[in-house]
Length: 142
Image (cartoon, rainbow, N blue to C red; front, top):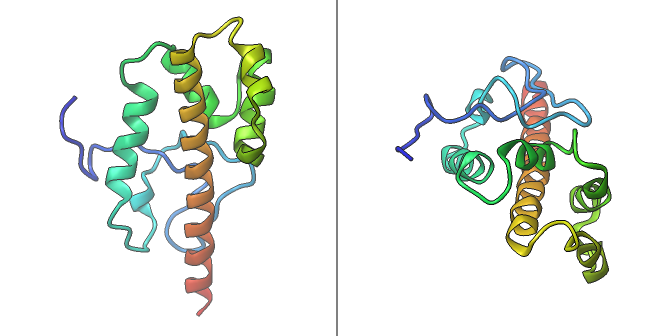
């Protein structure tokens, strides 16, 4: 996979509006039209984060890209994965061996790893964007 920069990085950052009054909608998807660079706030790590997310969700793997995107976006998931993905997005510390044991009947360890990493990256991305948008909104009010 080639090098990415701010112009070619995937556009993850749902719910963001043009600079003034930047907001993130509740439950927004990370699969959006603009990169995180769209915020006025300078973020020197945005490109690297976008590269990691892009490679985790779209790179080669044991699971289908659509499933990894679904786990990151927390939508359109197979029913058996919904509870685990919700738990990862809301309270990752509550995931137990029993949660995984039930899923190991259908998914092998590599597949579960990719699904869990995708969900964790999606959850962290959502929180990051919400925090940056909040800071941007505070900055606009100053």
